[in-house]
Image (cartoon, rainbow, N blue to C red):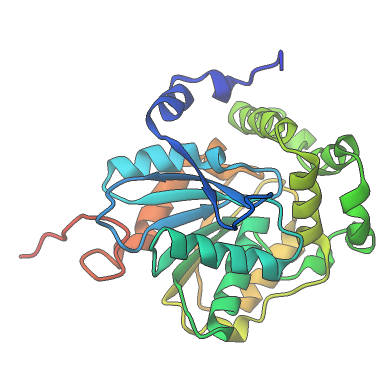
Length: 300
């Protein structure tokens, strides 16, 4: 690829690629299409890490700014990129296997867009199978119902569409005239475009299928969660205000982490603000069995 984004060329991203190893974790006997891409950084003594789940257009490295900053502050942070799964249930089963493989009993989950939807469905799934694994949720620009997406009627055909067509479908939601004047947001979009170009047809088709097939979150099964934080932005982004209001209604007791701007990918364009809100979200667990860090609170 001749084009290289500003973020890709940045010293911070270079440092990440040089210092945080990528793990390929195969979960089945054949290894066919079941390899998770995982970055795991921070103290291994932490038993309840913060796990990041990407959007349709993301990859595990999209959270590199959170991985670098939070691990330097004593948090164990993991970014997990799933192989092609063609249903939400299959994804949940695969994620449960991944946690078992990594010997992780409980997690805090940060989910962006589709990643946030899957995080909620995993809470639901683990409750139903009587293996609750999620302590808290941090949802960024996410949703609770896939019926909002315009491609829902065609979702069953995504598996046969060429990669070029699927990329155009994903890219059509990224740009907005309202973000052209914000360099950081445009840099984040350029970086995401690079990542999309590296995704296979199966990656794109399976993600879009999960994103668009009719499914919704049963929030009545979320009662075991200790806390939920909802992050969104006030500028233009793909999902829009009606979806934002819907998720507020589904989680009336959630804490709000609202950003004045940030676009679709605030964890890239407004990473300092996102990282601060994450630390606030996790602070209440310091010194407990659910802590995501090895920091010991100072007592009087």
